[in-house]
Structure formats: structure tokens, C-alpha cells
Length: 196
Image (cartoon, rainbow, N blue to C red):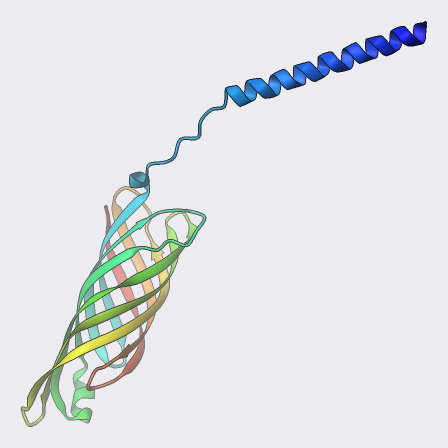
């Protein structure tokens, strides 16, 4: 008889404990706090930068707009649009029989960033730069050519403040192109600008 009463008490205890556990699960399910999606406008970064490049062959500058959504857990693919000016070094021109060569090109492409730490990005990129190359030979023979270049780059970019502030970057680059003077180069560049 005592064994039967103990078994009944244990059964009642188990079923009442089980009911409390089920009630708690149902309460948590019905009272979940919704996860609000973050507004992507809050994470969007706009950059306007000036870049000066250095290589064996040329002097170069460019102005670039870059826009991207700042995310932590994935490869960031920004949109870029730039305008640049290239001028080949004079000492190289004389050796190749040219008085002057200038290239004006529009650039577009895709860069990929990996967010290392807040405000520090490791970047790789590829771009195309169609434009015009103007050449003047030593005998004053002038020509204009359609120009297209393919750019590859790797670097670091530092953006210390999210809302508004300075941008600093350093890059290493490789270039293939249809220039009449040289078809490939390697070099580095420094970049400064603002984010807004």
C-alpha cells in the first residue's frame, strides 16, 4: 500500500513538473521579442577619395567614389566609379621615341573588402579603364588611340569614424593595358578622402 501511494505521488509530481515545463516553453514561444532587421541605410558607407599612384612608368592621380554596405560576416562588394589622369615619366618617353603621352580614362569595377576590425578593411579589386591615349613622337607626329586597361589591386583602408570623417588607404597594384608605350606595370598608391 505504501509503495502504491509513493508511486502515485511520484507520478503526480512528474506530471505537474512536466506541465510547468510545457507552460514555460509555450509562454516563451508566445512572448518572443521580435528581432528587428537593421536598416541598410544605417550601414551604407559613401567614400570620396583622391589617390596618388607611383610606379616606374608613370605619374597618376584619380578621384573615386566608393559605396558599400558595411557588414561584418561576409565579403563586402562595393561599387566604384572614378576619373583619373596618367602621365608617363619624361625619361622613359625619350628612350621610346616619344615627346609626350597622356592617357585620360574612366574607371569602373568591383572591389572586395574583408572587415578585419571596425574601421579597418583588407581589400582586393579588379577594374576596367577605357579611355583615350594621346601620343606625340619626337618628330611631332601626333596620334590618338582608344585605350583600355585592366587593373588588379590589394591593400588596406582605414575608416576611423562611421558617420563622417577621414579615409586613409595604401594599395599595391598591377596593370595590363593596350598602351602604345608599355603594356604592363606594378606599383603602389596612397589614398586620402572623406566618408559621408
